Image (cartoon, rainbow, N blue to C red; front, side, top):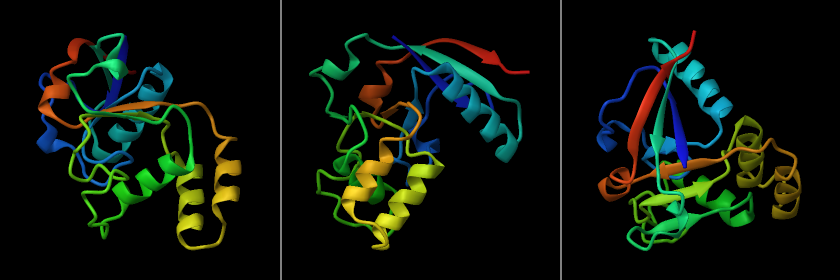
Length: 170
């Protein structure tokens, strides 16, 4: 399987220490199987941080989500569990790290699931603030564009990725 990482620079070696915290699935290295999604992220990152948009591609095992050598959290689609997981990982005040409903402590080596785009982020905030209930949250989440993200949170998981190349976007 080919995974893409949209960035503003070519990456020779993945360094988990350089990854930002409070992301959808916690601090980690994020990839996708969707080339256009990676391209949009590369353009966004270069606009924010400078540099030029670049898509770095990686070979990963086709059976990545079935591997027994790493701990995996799999969200095949949007769900209440997925939304709570994201809420907890993004929340700077969340401290229940032993909870299976977060990855703040990188208890999962790999997490897979949809991206919480701007529309979903707004819905999640409305849910958190009590403006909408879980039924409305779940109903509205069904109308988002398909997306996916594979996030890697341990060195053991990173070692499953083999760099295949880098493509600069003009």
